[in-house]
Length: 341
Image (cartoon, rainbow, N blue to C red; front, side):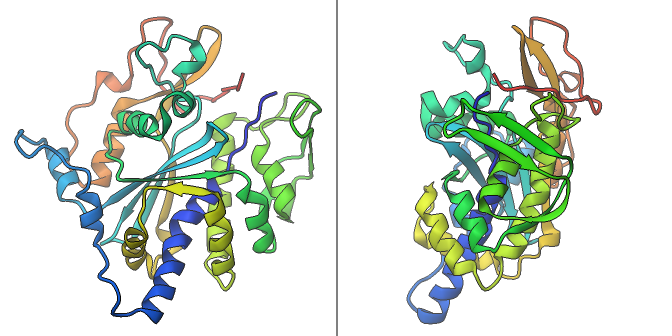
């Protein structure tokens, strides 16, 4: 079985804590040394052509102080976690939108069935290609990105003296061919996971006997989103500077330090009650004997319109992305049995 690391909490951790600690430290010791850019100035780095007739949504995006950040968890050249964070400075609210790695994304001149999954984009087209793909799927502009490798997981969790979670099932899986060999044996129930065990918890897809999350990859994402909340809440404490120092060893971003400080001013006073996690609206489909998560354009469009407080237009294609082969099926709480190959 291939690697299947999911490190959602690390990327969200970076989003909230990097800016916050930097701002507090910098403001205390250098109160007059810098003029922070506003989030609007950051957002304006992504321009919408003012010469054309803007739709209501385009106008709302152009005038919004929201900043949209692509968060990517990766192992070497492969992306294993893709999320879009949209932070509203005025409301002090953050929406985290998870994009499953098996999301269908068709690209010209990429005919291999594995290359039609969104997690294959980074390896061939880099971060700019992935930004284009996520903008296409989510219908939202991306202003900044942060990538993080999974090596940060163990050390950050240990710095936090572990993370308490409710393990939803007995997790027992063995893969002697993994590098290094993987052995997962975690009992169900509430417990505090150290770094190594937390990494195994995040890697878990299914037991050796084939049982696992009833909703497949979507069920795993929901469990890990709960993990995000616990980790972020615990990180916003006295150990935050140490967490930042460790996290910076494993990230790449196009944020400048000044922009980070500007973002941080908007994060001061952020409440975990204002962190909402979602998964893109979708349905599942098997093509060429491979399972895909296909974006539901109408549902995604409705989400984006609500995010920007715009009255929605007519839905697209009755909520389906039309694919020529096989029969499409809309996601009405359909079980997601997506498997990695």
